[in-house]
Image 1 (tube, helix red, strand yellow):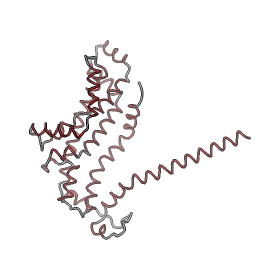
Image 2: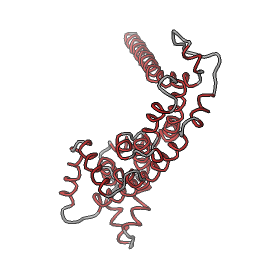
Image 3: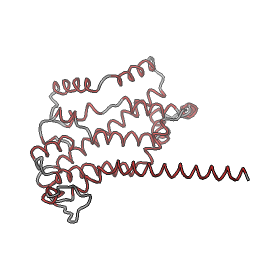
Image 4: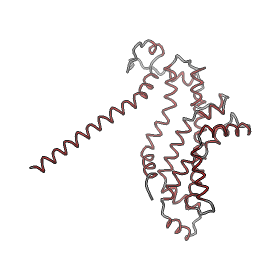
Length: 287
């Protein structure tokens, strides 16, 4: 009987803890998601209805798509969106190729001074990003690449952190696979593309998604290197819209523009969330 009481007591405690955990996570999820809900809700409110609310309402009885129409007709949001897509795709593609090749070199190729070079490479992570921005700005300006996609893309095609993350994943693959492939006459490039890349696919997808998000949200560098609206991205274009487009008072139209900009990233994360979690967990494993 004592054992049964102890077991029932343990089960009750476990249920209480589990219930409390779910309640806490549910409340926290509401807190985190509320700003996004408020953004979407405001984007469906008319300008007059929004300004008439002395006390903000958590719902609207007369939703409208007028703000979304204005976002693409009254301001060049479509142009900013297209520029951002081009910048993001090209930068991410080049960065993934560079990262894979660099990670392979540091994890599998034996060359003189490899460890020293990699240590120095990691030391670059200690340099404040503001200092790099200044150096990049001077370089791009001297090359007369301001207000060009080349000037936007070049400083973003490498990442020390992503190389380090992928290098650690490559290092977990047994050396025996590499030696066996070399015995069969497989080239390094073929071994990389046929063995290492498929095995580390979750991490590569994680790096790709994170880079896409980074490019999409990039603000400081595009704002610094471009003053021609033809090359504005959504990050610095949204500020231009606020100042010279809808105006500071038209909050619903601004929210509609922000929703349009935010949705692709949300969809991207929902589609690849399992791969991202798998890649992050693999990156934390010991070989």
